[in-house]
Image (cartoon, rainbow, N blue to C red; front, side):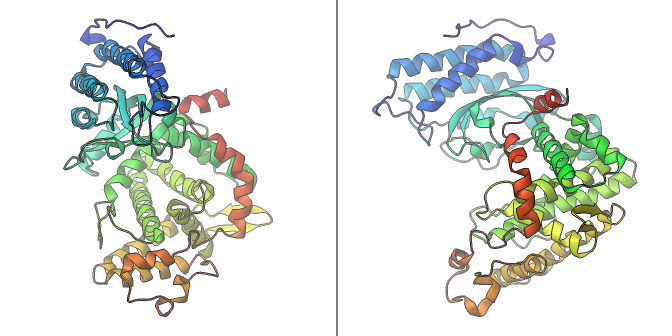
Length: 465
């Protein structure tokens, strides 16, 4: 068993110099959390009466081990002191309550990473939570991360892209729930007794996004025989450069959800809509980031050019062939971008090679953004169902619907006496199937996509070495 460590005193002046993951208490904490996780039910509780369950004393000792490790590590991170005190209190209350459904609202409210977005600042985070695109259960996770907030990005956020809640972050280390495809740390995933009135931060791991972008893009370039400009090839070889592109892309994308002509709740909370509506919203935000990146490149910011490459490659080569085909709205957005560029002769598949017109790509990509923005602007004057059909028409202008689709047959094929949310039941799980091109690409990239599970910047550095 890993040794239990006592809290140590660390001078505040040296707090960020020492890596948390190199301290002897980190593996103790990680081991304690990994021990607790398999005991938990989907809601985060531990059923002590279940067959094979540990006894209460064993769980309590493991929780105490985690608490001691947190208290040992906390002096390394004085900016998180209030959060760590609340975290320890929440852990003790959970144990005292018999390990019922956890409630970590107090520690969630105490964790405020967006208040100090200093570049390179470390955070130690422990919460019962699910990880999006990872573990769907509210198990405990422990994560050590660093803030990504270079001065050029901070200046853009201050002057042009106000987004006070956004946190660009990178992994230092993590427990099993993040050894997955998850690349976000969001407060709404955490087990609490009630949702706060508003959330005050949201984190996206730009290192994982950059690493899987590089690996999948390089494989796609090889499979498709794409002739890359030297600048794109240099970008794909540079993890840090890709991370900078993604943190800018993410910051603009995130704020776009609440900017523009929005005929509906931009986050679509508690709304049941056809999945192509979610696909268009995500694509709109990505293409808005693309459009802004074109402006930034013209103003001399090199990351602006890199964001354009990242959006086109990630959307066209990774999104459509990642995940299952059940209402895959991100995949749909990628399919739509490719089909639009193909229809406008920006991409051509000839002689088993994909040709990209790099000169016209920025203009035509922004053109698609304009079509989606017009859909939104017109949607303000439409009833919900009419707007859904208008969006379907936009998508189906470029992507062939499933031949068995009821929606493809138009309003006359649906029972319009039903409320709109009931008509969503008529949407097929794969309403817009993959084209023959993507079916073939999916087979070629299947193993590469699978290899990106749990990927970090360190994995890509090791592969390059």
